[in-house]
Length: 77
Image: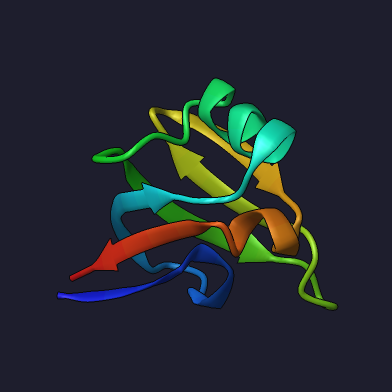
């Protein structure tokens, strides 16, 4: 099982969140949005310039900046 940052995943890829890094408000904001370890996540689409990234988790869609997504490490099957 490969581990890679969410920012490097392609549309349609799925995986389980393994770790959420970052510090301070960025880390707290990600956790508050439901981005926590062991949660399944799928990349739905990526904007043409690569920012933002739309993901689906826990039945809802979420948009993240590329630098935020770089703090989320996903175990991709």
